[in-house]
Length: 197
Image 1: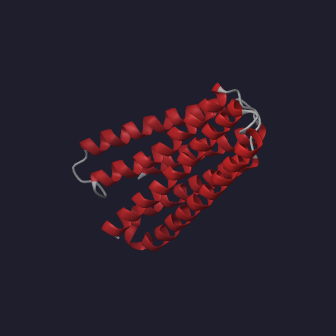
Image 2 (image 1 turned 45 degrees about the vertical axis):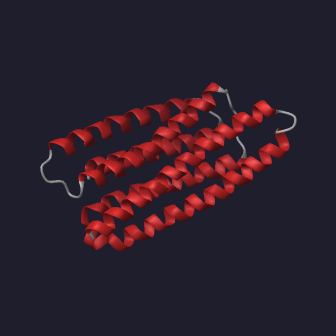
């Protein structure tokens, strides 16, 4: 449980740094996201080692690995996003990208709120279900923003600046994958609650 909570804090720190990057374009935030991804990797390795060595786990080993894996997918995609931003030297970001980053920050905070509740599934099953419903709704809202942003980028850039459109499309793709990973986190939590609450 401590490792789940530590990983969630790391994901939240990465999300905060990503959002700051999209707000102010400061390149220092790129390294911050990469460092948080490395921290998350250390935690997931420790989780996998502990699962292998522990005779009794709080819930199914497969569920533990799937949950931490979906959380790790979120921060891996954050790293992929900032690496693309760095590669293409993007310094200005569309409002839709900023809006998606705000959803990512909120989703990371909801995930961090959910992790301690896993310690007592019987008492916290209802609250966990509320949080996962919010994550699913946020993913749906992010999809709408993603579509609107891509459409606007295509209309404004597609005919005249195909390269810039391609770069924006790649950034949108990574942002969407981050939010998708948080929906996967929600699904994993729901599965655990159904099996154990």
